[in-house]
Amino acid sequence: MNQMLTTMNEINQFFEHRSVQLGMNFGLSRMEQLLAKLGNPHKELKYIHLAGSNGKGSTLHYIKEMMIAEGYTIASFTSPYLEKMNEQLKINDEMIRDEDFVAVFQLLWPVIQEMDEAENGPTQFEILTVMAFCYFKNCKVDIVLLEAGLGGRLDSTNVIEPLLSIITSISLEHTNILGNTLAAIASEKAGIIKKGAPIVSGVTEEEPAQVIQQKAQSLNAPYFQLTKDIVIRNLEHREAAQSFTFAFRDTVLEQLELQMLGRHQVANAALAVAAVVLLQDSFAVSEESIRKGLREAKWNGRFEKIQDKPTVILDGAHNPAGIGVLIQTLKEQYPKQKYRFVFSALRDKNYSEMIRLVDNVASQIFFTEFTHERAEKATILYETSNAKQKHIDFNWQTCLTHALTAEEDEIVVITGSLYFLSLVRGYMKERKDKV
Image (cartoon, rainbow, N blue to C red; front, side, top):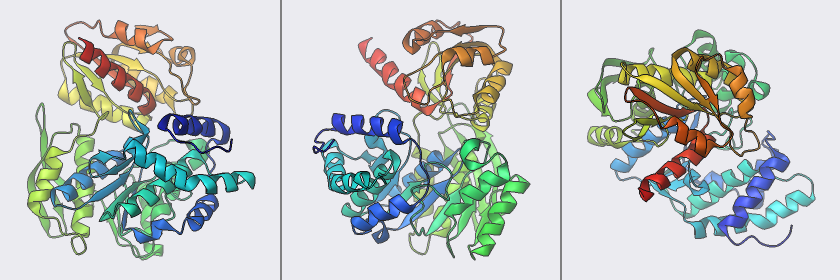
């Protein structure tokens, strides 16, 4: 395929075909080659680099909102997207426009072809990461918040020298790629720690925390850990908000308010505030901007209530740790209701453990499937469950329709995969608009 791609539709198809064809292929040599041919645009930007099994998107979002409140221009690169690929490349809260996306892609196109011919073609995620660097450089941003795709050490984002790195959490995920112990996964994530650049960590379990701390020490990177150095006190949660006191070094901020629910969001917010405090010398952010940014931050698909009567919650939990946090948040926010789950997941996730956790609390579970090269079959998910009240529907739209006939005391919780959520969210919004 040699012709130039000129529309979002063509680029979307190219990416879909490429992810099936090349899949995930780790290592940084293709990235370095691609960037070198484009004049190393990544070297002209400042970064905060984020990795972690859960929470990196929310933590990034808090930092972004605090810095926007102060008046900085913030670029962010995140994955996956919820409704449109453009969401992955944002300046402040604006995603890249279609025409800019096409233009940046076309800039890379000759190099992609050249590397393909040498049988060393970049993966879809590598292309997207390099597009982000090129776009952000042209936009003259103050700082880039860069989220690692998978792991850290060999992730395509790990070609940068950040001002600061953050590891939000470690749980058993992608064990076929990252290793099957928390320490092994921590070692992969700790690959984003760079010489002398501070590392903020939300990892509190002893074994993985030790791996991260040792890596930091070996690189002379100042190390700050949640609960040890970054302290959360006076946590209060209400129906539509929660507040906490933040203490780190000589900074104490009382009654910081969040509208994102669940105590895991307090941990994410605390990591974000610690990062902002550590960068005060190069990026001053006032207490007023910290408070405003935290208060206004909301992140679609993270315990997101999208409907009343019945109450419908969308949550992007896609591993057992995420499901555990979701269940804890449901019990805090809706202790008297029953929970009716709609569940679908990717094949390479630990869905059997996710389903076991859901089985314990669900009044009913509806299993379904969606079109994605890594999606698991509904039949397999259904057979994995031991729930008394379980249903299967291969068409996710009709599955949703059945699930939404919930009783008054039931909440509908849609979860298992961010990719699945992206389809559901768009569909539910469309449905709402028609009513």
